[in-house]
Amino acid sequence: MILRERLYSVIRLLSAFLRVSKVESQAIRADLTHLLSPQMGKDIVLFLKRWPKTYLLVDEKLYDWISLPFSTAFRAGTEGSQWIIGYLLQKQDLVNDIVQLLVTLMERRERAILIIQCENWWNLAKQAEAHLLISCQVLSHMDMETKQQYWTEVLQPLQHQAGNHCHTGGPVWHFYKNTPETVNLIIVFIDVTHKQICYFEESKAMNLYEACLTLMQVHSKNNLGWQRIDVTAEEEQYQDLLLIMELLTNLLSKEFIDFSDTDEVFRGHEPGQATNRSVSAADVGLYGVKLILSMMSQDLLKFPTLFNQYYKLITFICEIFPEKIPQLPEDLFKSLMYSLKLGMTSMSSEVCQPCLEALTPLAELCAKAQETDSPLFLATRRFLKLVVDMLVLQKHNTELTTVAGEAFYTLMCLHQAEYSELVETLLSSQQSPVIYQRSADAFNKFTASSTPPMLDRKQKMAFSKSLEEFMKNKNKERE
Image 1: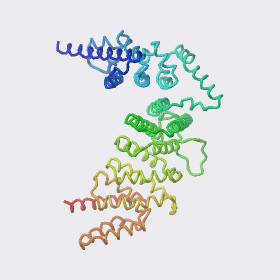
Image 2: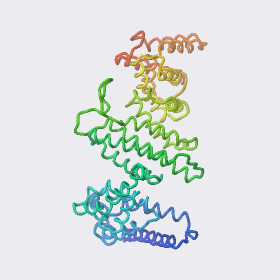
Image 3: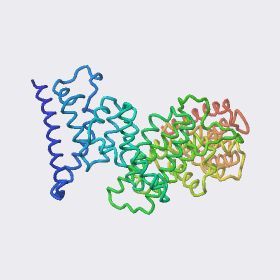
Image 4: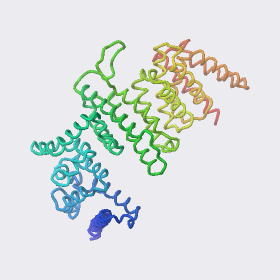
């Protein structure tokens, strides 16, 4: 009895929310928004976005037991579920939130079929900013007759509209000229890149890279000159940046998670080898970094989620495409190097780790190129002291020892003269003869397996063992 009463209370709570939401919609249509509570509006939006994902058209096969009243009210084919979907589709004041909710609901076939049967769904699908979001999910659930209807009523008119726009001299992509519309498209591509890109053959992946690059160019143009000064606008920019970084990270994942039928390695082109690829994931990623830096502000860096995602992204690029970094424009190259320095010196260990991981492939690239006057060579030289200070002089998170050691060894091999000078400076600062000798012995062990040190796996393992012993002794001295 108690359980039944609780279940009825849950259903009554839902009914109360829907009634309040209906009253709010009527007030909006009557231009009485000044009488409404802003907080109540936010709570209704939050509820309508979250509740259906879990409880509407629930998959009963996933549960050992489900309440009969709840199942009767909200499972597929019931009047309750049909009414709720129809009501959601009528909420034109929440069109963007509802479209994103529908994308989630349509991941399951039984939900998608029920949604397609609603007349209001077809009206929503005809909106330019909504149809692409919906199309990606819904086409796979349609029979041939419904697909033909979708083409006739939704896609074909939009194609004609876009074609007319092209005849007047405007690119198709600039048909989506408003920032909210481009953000919706970014969400579409996030979904595609997250779930499907690993199965794309090279030609399809290239088309996706080109589309994503163009989309970000349009988004950049739309944001040019924007002045966001209120808290809500800053939150929107924060969300935009997170979406862009999520899209770029998903794109880059194709380079090391590839389940396509082809045996070709996407980035596996040796120097001088011909390739017909016009746009690569690296091109999109680096353009995205440029866009992100142009939108980033000091206040936005206060969001931990934002800068953690940013450093994850630039580490991906440095690890997968280190050869692209020296080719960057000077201002972008300097910004990227400054980001790595900032992450190592002013951020948490969670940020410091990916920065150290990014340094190693960049230093290895310099060692192979042997160009001692290149900007990348000079930039990596400045990081040598930072890494040595972190390991030798500063107290740091022991979880960073391995990744810092890899960066240390690579930089030491690359900048041997500077390393020797750095060691002499550190030793000369020791006033105790005992500590001086102990430190000198430790530094000698670092290069004992090879003089000069070389990028060799066996020597690197010997260095790691010596570093581990050195760190243990250093920690004992501090205790």
